[in-house]
Length: 166
Image 1: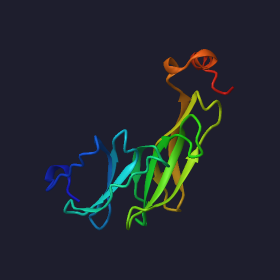
Image 2: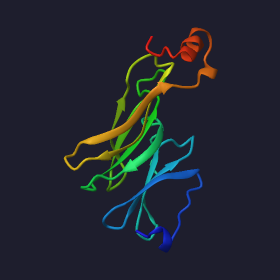
Image 3: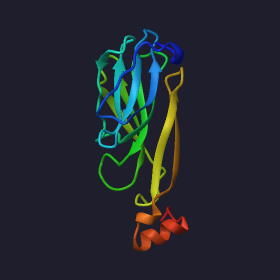
Image 4: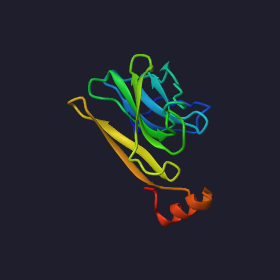
């Protein structure tokens, strides 16, 4: 893959605002995480010449916002990290991890993580992670109360008071 000082190509995807992460594979291909509010977590695999191999994928329904992308050492998958609403419906944000096939971008699974508490107030967000050589995955996530100004009644009072465990 080209380095910043010797880039031989650039790629633009009109439906997306930004690329949040790019990871080079040993064969020269580059896995990228793209972002736009209405697109959610989307990944694309580019060749070493900048041609699209697959994607962009769209994982808005299952994944929500993508915040980071990693390729494990075996390079058989692409991991998307992020957060979004619970798959079963309801309120709040859960941390999310989605595993894609490196070959074609197909989602193999999505997992959700929460620390509990009042889902109207507590937001669980994953911002990154790493695939460990033993096959495990370490997530970098946080939990907190956000957006108190959008709440009303008891939810607003509890939010401002930091009472998200109720």
